[in-house]
Length: 265
Image (cartoon, rainbow, N blue to C red; front, side):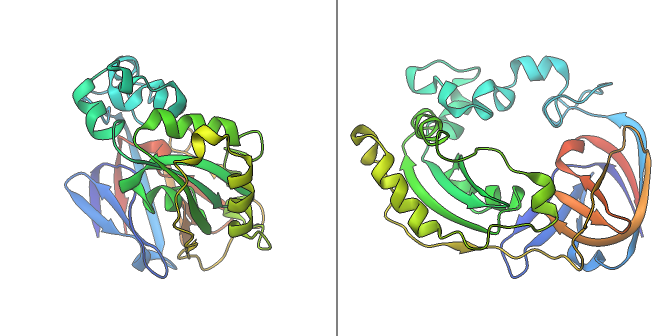
């Protein structure tokens, strides 16, 4: 079977294991059923901006042309650094977009993809955000009414937790299995300044996430379409937004948002 079109990051469904679906053009490929089989992915050389749709020679920030990188609300600096959001002050690239994305409930969380990390996401992006980061366990810390406050809490907690995912350790499944997220949350409660305590979330449920992987790589060879326009191999598993192939090869699908591919199954 053959599919053709621009790809976007994989859509996911929480299940045991996680269900993965790759949007390509007008279609969607159910990826879990392909694990154990050979896949060939051919890059045509064409990249289309995921915001405006125009062709671009270079993809910026996982899918944008340069103009949209500078102007699109979904590419603003507060996406990476939530504390910089000024939407609550009425300042944004697109205030109507901000009302739906910044001025809504946000979750500050702890997740374990390798070690414990702190992060921020919109309330409606749980558990999608955790899955995209390849987290095996996660717990909510706080719920805030906007992105800025969530970012302020995250910045404070970065003194005690990393905010980065060690993607190599995540893909090798090197997880801090002895971590007790409830105990870590208790530490946070003790650490947070009084003015931020009111945002603490009473939900102490720990979400456990399992991924469809037959074999985790021992060593990792990161591959991409810019240097390798034809990628083929046996799909060994999927974790985060990575396809894991035989021969220790891993492909970050999200990094290739907007790439026009021909996929042979």
